[in-house]
Length: 181
Image (cartoon, rainbow, N blue to C red):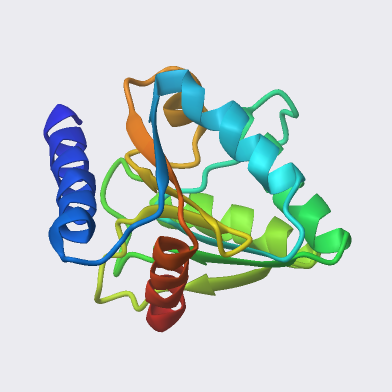
């Protein structure tokens, strides 16, 4: 887990440095979100979204417990879709279930509920792993980092992500996600 967080953090920093030193202006506000700082800010941005939410998530594990944080995000995405926001979610679909892993089952369960709630759900190709944890809101806000959509990642784990307020980066991130589906 710690190795994965280091890789993701280095990836995020590399992306930011590329933008900063590419000779192009990156008018962006970047906020580091560690551990439990991520959930309330993401939830607020989803709840106030007006146009579009694009999600690419490796794991989206929800339950029927309304206190479960990922379940609350699932319901917020459905609520956004019901108020006219265009919501799409791309999920990982592994070739086969690994022993002790419930990834495919969890993602299929959440996808079925999201679809019934009016959210467009896509799965990646089973022969390619889509390990992203990326959310783009209203072509402006980008959330990227190590947080999966699971109760443990959102409420207990040591995780690190960033929120970038940049229409330019949001456009590139949304195009990346849409290119996978």
